[in-house]
Length: 408
Image (cartoon, rainbow, N blue to C red; front, side, top):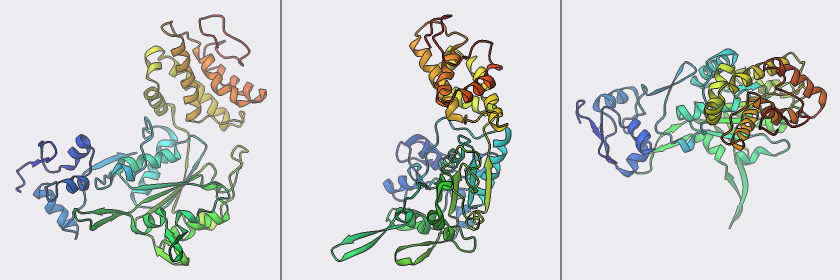
């Protein structure tokens, strides 16, 4: 094939210049590897790209995906691995957007830089700051294979790596999915089934600050910066594939619960935390970013009462400021915002075609306010919110509203 000739897709006959990978993903939902499984020997790139890939890689039999196919993550350019199917990555969260404003934008950019250079990392922050969602998005968009495990207090996590089984000869050790992922990576195979490329995984450990001493110890060898190792059956250690990343998330920084609202947090051994090459705190998202996400999630409210987002945004900022100033003993994460907007949407639906009253926020806010429980905390939340919406639009849920057709 010459450089000037386009490449024909064997699936639909479409001709595209240079590289067929983008067309396969966008039109047919398949990777280049899956395409070659169905059409062995079919060209997927031009001679120009093939020559460049061969020059940059000793694997002439299977050149890597072109490095000029990238995705922007918080201003950091990541190569996209088209050899990795979406099923091997974490799913992209609904309506996800990388932050562009405020503290969280800077937090996420630092984390993105560290992931680009294959560092181990630990992200901590208040509930709802997008710690896990960020890793999900990086995995999904850059096509980095990723496995996720969540810490549950008291559970023996050895089974993540291997377990005891039985066969006709008696006891046998069975390798776990995580052991193979850490030591072998994601295996790219050619049409004959031969492994031609190994792509390192991300291991995401959520709720890491809930780990007890025994659970945390499992990450000590894996995150060793000299040479990562993982213990397999019979105590034999195996080398972690170079480029593998371990990222952990938690609500506390490893020093236990200091705020009284994440009481399952434990103190993590400092020598284990020190093995995470990068530690970042994530802050709450700026409303400039959060509003766009909320509008995508609640299109009915955009259509019927767009002014509600301004009211909810001002209340969100006020509540979080009160929490940070310790005048409100509560949490108000993105889930809390969606709780209010979600109930507002329910109210609008049940109201049918009637005009939406300006004080719909009064009923919508109850879905979150009523979970606060004690009246002192509820009053503090009302005080923080009330000055940011028109007078009289919020109350403590003492009875139905008679000023309009909404029965709160």
